Length: 189
Image (cartoon, rainbow, N blue to C red; front, top):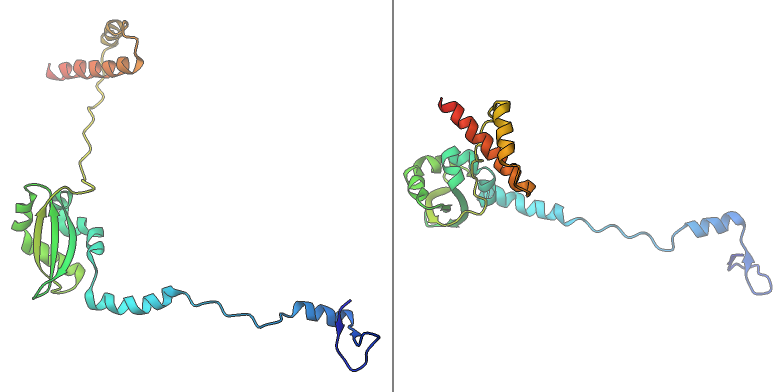
């Protein structure tokens, strides 16, 4: 039983509460609820949005759109590394593979135009190339030989020649090689 201090009292100086009053007391919090802390993303957005307008996109944005900027010839052999501030503007450092640095230098005017379309007019004023390995080198997939229809007699002869081989992985690899050789010979005729 829940008690409340009032003027009328029983032997202990407290009066019993009605069930409705007791339920209301149990459901009412003792203190007002504290507000939830504001999310830091809102404050970060207020700081970063003006900075993004002032300084333009970073090297991450250029990396994401590098295939569009550099084109199919330069994109696989180069990648933007960093943006640094210079006296007359920003300098983009491009990492290239081996002799591709000469290609990048030869097309630097076109690259600067395309980069400034993404970064904003006149932000990047010059390019600097460095040679080195590129992390995610994009290589063209190796072409698979076309399946060539072989004569059933030729496949039987191939199976007879491979009958003595006990390793199944080696046997299947040699069978595919044999099919390719037979098909290549057919194409030459």
